[in-house]
Image (cartoon, rainbow, N blue to C red; front, side, top):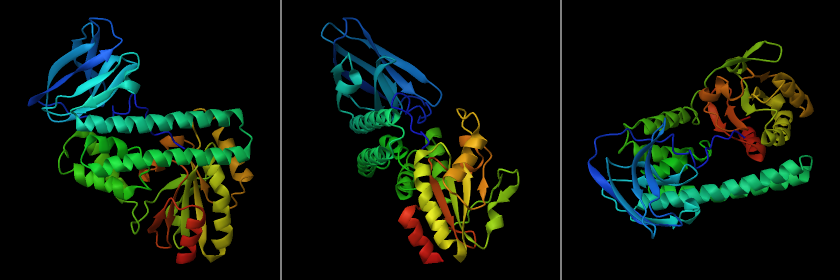
Length: 373
């Protein structure tokens, strides 16, 4: 699966308010223990391109500090002891947050009062970090036992259980206040296909309040592209070469029900799903169903991406003839065209080229095919 989630350290660099003339102040104070008398702490402002240090304060012998900084409206900030020891904040005009913590490990020990969005952001960070720790642990177990298929199945279940738990927290945060920077951070950690209506909800809420900010414009454009893949929309046409260099276009399959299946030889979840696609193909091919497999092989770490691709096709028994790839990995031209952010990802198209479903797998795919064929 594509790792499109950036870790907390840098996750907010993609969201940034354009700086404006200050209209008020934010006053931050608190106590950070285990720092030397006279140690500095810093307030950084986060932009798409860089982290800008805006203010600093000295702690006294008891760890107390305070400073007041002029700001305009709300924005993403961080309170930093050093580049490895900091916390992220959402601050707005007039707030007077009190932030306490242990200077040895600020991220895991801090508390915040007087800044509701910063408190919600703390809940976001905790959920994100807890899931990241679990995923790392599961990954290490798999690396130690790469050939144990039964263990792999169990690890996959544990993986998605952890993700579901994290997603539930994110969804609750979003529903509490869709028109917030915390919701914007949270929504972008969710699967856009699975949670398309929630993406739309956040977009509609934010467009009423901060629609001219650069970071929101990127999100808004992303949602607009997602809406192009809604049921009933025409599937965007594309042409890619097969392994023999022959171009195959989606439009050449018009008149059939087509599953566009985005996958790759290096994607374990894709390989695990392939038997279900084969089963559906064998069951419905004679009724007018076909598969157009689009491989995202071509990652930098692949020494022979084409051979990896062909070997996986043969090993997984992908017997249909429409296999295409430009062997550019995530740089493939079809990735932005279809808003692909993780694989496996599928788009089901009817005989007229209209989208009838996305991300349909297993029994859900078979039920949909039974309905339309």
